[in-house]
Amino acid sequence: MNYKLYNTKQPLSNIDAAQQSAALLRTLAHNFRSLASNICSISTYCLDNCDTIKTEKQTALLQDMNQNSLSLLTLLDNLLLVGKLSDSSAPLTTHPEILEDILIDAIARLKGTYPDAMIQVIMPKEIIILPLDLVLIRHVFKNLLQILLFVYSAASTLTCTVSIDSSSVLIQLESRNPAYTPCLSDSCKQDITLDQLLIQAHLGTFTATLQDDYGIFIITLPLITESEASWNIV
Image (tube, rainbow, N blue to C red; front, top):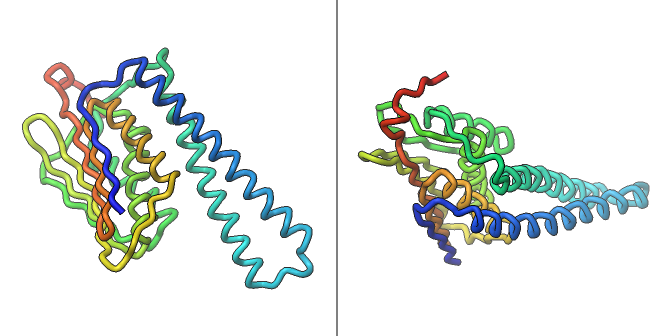
């Protein structure tokens, strides 16, 4: 498998953002219906056959329902994010945020779902402050790390490496598992596309490379400008 997606550093125009958001909304709505239908079907089957289902099959059905429910929650989050991104009356509002704090928060939230996940963070010594929408960027980090865990198995070790130059910050999220053959689902591709839009809305760049034995997401985000340097961190 080889999946790549590249971005430019140009901001999305209102027309481009609206068109891409509309396409994502249609796809997400279709997936929402499919997941809800699966949950209804499984629950109906369990209720109709509760006295005859063997324990092993019942466990498998409940696991499927649980997975569909988790996917449904993720999809709902994505719907809200697309709605926010496509709302031209509410342009993206950024505030000075400490990058390390957002990464730690995203990892902590991820570990709520994957408590055994192994994630190594490599940060420079200096404090990195970026103009960000906290909720959107936290979602991007959490979602991309979750995709790497899902695609390359939760047993793989993830590495998050941050480096800095004169005008931007590079964040590299990586998973290597040579013994595992990944499978990139349509929902993962949609999530990656949404993350691409969110990064581009921050005037950043995004590259995704998913090979058979490793996956890498590379994000660049601009540092604060001189006019933003007087912001106060609350």
